[in-house]
Length: 260
Image (cartoon, rainbow, N blue to C red):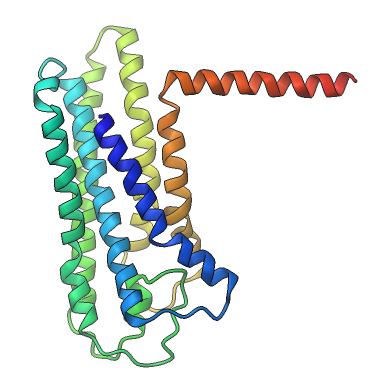
């Protein structure tokens, strides 16, 4: 599990680095410009990292399923070598998944104001700048996105559905509580990520993004990667104990200031 978490942390850092620095630069300097090739590079890297995160979340749900439903066979099945193979598969599949849609979009002709009314190079704003006819490019993009998100969501739900059914049959309350606390943090991360992504990309849309769409984009590109490490840190007993001590220290400090 820690091999997966370490790679997931590295993925989150790359995910933020692909968009946030450029986003902050454009917010600081209103007349920000980006070349055609740089825009497509950001688009490809951003969506590849997002696809990789989808595969990582599915792999981590598989890990929890094996750890809870098959605890005796778990060390043999999820050996370090197996984890490294799964990690490599997630990275490779993630960066290969969106190659075809990117190729279809790059072959379009672009005209008009050439102003992207968004924080990043997203397929919707890019397609809105393309000259008609767009051909099958929007359909291909939507198809790949739907298969990626719905397929991984189904796998995660199936894995945790089996896990929850298995836990419900467990008679030991201590084991039940510990197992539920283990999967609850991962379910929270999955909900934050897929909730925002599904609202953004599963429903086909065109034209300029609304203010709500921009806010959702900021949420899943910056806020969610910031929250994920904090959520996983709450699983660590040492981190929780340090947080309790810090909280007690703050409370004592506030009380001393009030009394004086």
